[in-house]
Image (tube, rainbow, N blue to C red; front, side, top):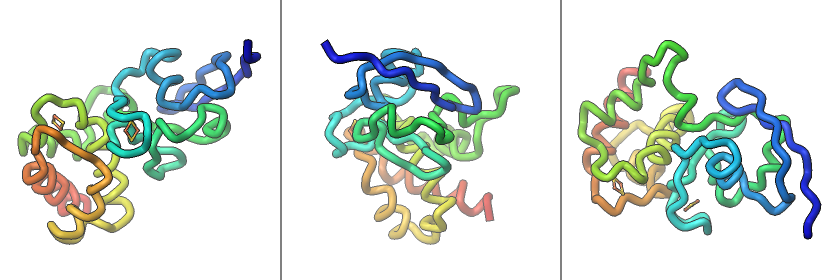
Amino acid sequence: MTRSVHLSLDINTRRHELAVEPRVTLLDALREELGLTGTKKGCDQGQCGACTVHIDGKRVLACLTLAAQAEGKAITTIEGLSTTSGDLHPVQQAFLDHDAFQCGYCTPGQIMSAVACIREGRAGSEDEIREYMAGNLCRCGAYNHIVAAVRDAAEAAR
Ligand code: FES
Ligand code: FES
């Protein structure tokens, strides 16, 4: 049996202590160990984007990140995007306003990616949004609405 490692992860500005095998991904640590099930697993191979979270403000795929690699860094998940008083992040609100989801399974990853996409300055036009959101697959085909939501949120952020 592989020995567990003790990790201390800073998630949504809260410190979480956990003991996991070194092979455990950040995605599984969030979902299975910490009960933060907003981050989704669509493929576990880096191909769908459903597991997108932020590490130190940058979007990363939690299925291709070991939990141990995230130690000492600031992790943000979909659960940490709204304010503590429960106000939605502008991108969350824009997704609601534009019906930018159906089943909702890709949505946490889409939203985390969109927040980063805007921050990266990659939301200047519809084409640019499509390109820089292309790492997030949506089987419900909500792409047109997602682009509209990201566009609105990007304009509001300017
Ligand atoms: S679950 Fe990580 S990219 Fe699909
Ligand atoms: S809303 Fe269902 S996969 Fe995107």
